[in-house]
Length: 214
Image (cartoon, rainbow, N blue to C red; front, side, top):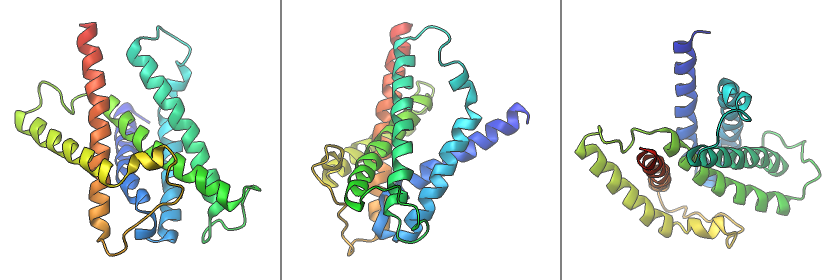
């Protein structure tokens, strides 16, 4: 596989994962069967992402660990742990596709693990994307693009508070609550804005560390 083809495949997988994130967070609004199917696709995409980024694992113990590399590595390991917990707890709760494999985990324990891992995974994957999309708020980006993205991030902060995402991250909420009178698209757009918020934070950290090194 040549470098250009590999890059295109990696980009496609990354885009698929970005699209899947807010859809997976909508859970009951898209239906439990669809949620389970999308979860399987996300797990497969994550594994493929790591296979295609094998150089990261290979060079893990090589070279100097700068502040930015420490942040990248800690974030990546946290996501790796979360992405192990999510399919295991998800399979333990499965009611439609993988109902025969429960790993001896109770439904109540699996639910707590799954909700906590899902919300932390959502936040950290968004942050991870921002760390690596370095031109998101780059100096060469147009002023209009920067303003639009900043406005989306500001709305993302509002949506973060409105949806009480902190309550799930801190395990104050052990159940996912949905307003079934609300169109699913509103929920998905809110979570897409929250993704932009954390991606923006990651991008700003990368930009700050780059300037500090400079």
